[in-house]
Amino acid sequence: MQIIEYFACPDQERWLARIGKSDWPAGSLLTDLLRDGRFRPLCGQSARVYLLTEGDELVSYCTLAEEDDVRGSGLGPWIGFVYTFPAYRGHRYVGRLLEHAFRTAAAEGAARVYISTGHTGLYEKYGWTFDRLLPDMNGELSRIYVRET
Picture (cartoon, rainbow, N blue to C red):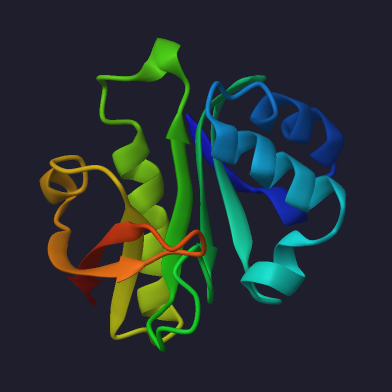
């Protein structure tokens, strides 16, 4: 398995099509944001999309960005859009992506890295700690997880 960064790869259209096959509404949103060039204006100019691949298959993906669905909190950076395709679930593959994004943020000087989610019990097994509840862009409370670098 290999981690590649979407904006640095030459075959973006192929990977964009694979992201678009997610069975998760946020996957469609990410696809639209990338296709329309709105991802970086919304999430930050240094925002990245990490893809965990196995050959030509997309296993999992996530983003590392200054902003996520909890806006204006003063927190960041954020790991977001975390998704693993059903055929690859249960093998902790997403942990590789989370660790890669976390280490990247740490190497760039972040003291803490955050994740906004509705899930309970997923991120704890990868070293994340529940921090607080904050409203997301839709006004719904989101669970905020943090990991100190």
